[in-house]
Image (tube, rainbow over the protein chains, first blue to last red):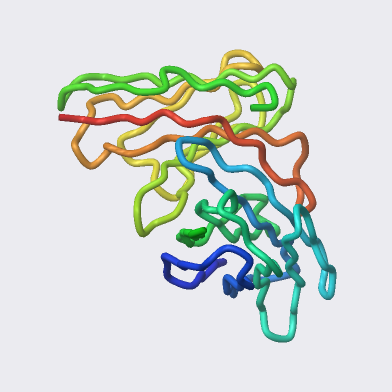
Length: 111
Length: 114
């Protein structure tokens, strides 16, 4: 079945460092891919998405490119801030119409 | 949270008691979902609904039932709570079906079964 694999966390960075959180997927058909962010004590918020191969989603300085050849959707940010500390979830949605999530990656950014 | 409210936000209950969690939306979206979030598992789908009185099971539905008698409300019931159902429960809504539509999530209900 469809699945999403994310890198284990926590990812610990200093402010202004470069961020990469890896995400790979397995799916039949041509899924859409999403990144959601969860701040402490809150629900998940959509961060960005890409609906077809080679699309780049971007929002708030975060970017991810839909790579069909490597079945990946890695999240990147050039310069993280303390306020980016959160849990990040990669997800896919395919023909089943259900969002399937990875296990989440906690990001901790220190001043 | 964009017109979606979960209640209660926190609940402690005893093993064997019934519990009902409520999800209320003001967006008039047809599609509603219940997930549970557990460490090491991410979010897992419990039940979902495609409209009034149209519900179906997700991957972890055992021990849970749902009802949707109105578009705006989606209720999740634990018939007889167990400690393994201690979790954070999230409701989500979607305005459309298909790969292009993401979900909007509520703020969650933290349930502890003692």
